Image: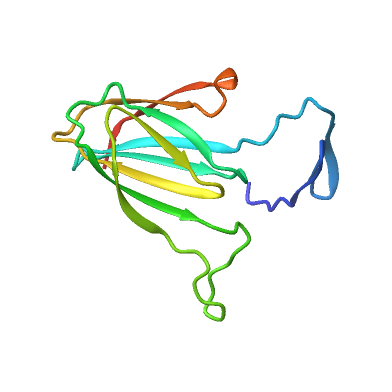
Length: 161
């Protein structure tokens, strides 16, 4: 306790070295290293409004056609709000350079099942309105761009404050 640790991680292709206080403690090399995750998704439900909030991050250099399923959600309104931040992943907003990246908000039509294309290098937040607050919503997210590699992720959104 009350100790400072210096941690360093070096990554070069399929070779990873981990250092603790300047001492090499792990070294991993090989094809067994998993490919980086290109798409991440999560969902929550706003307890006060009943809104279902779906968040997606696509760090790939290509768009990802997706199928979003909200099978446990009831009373979903078709008009939702989508906010997307996308652009050059190395762009920086600064006082000297101005705004290189800015979120864009627009309307999107949704339902218990809908298709969406996650743009390359993007963060997307979709706020789905419901007519009432639900105690639990199950979100199932399907990638449909390559059916032979399709994975089904069952995520759950629980009410929170």
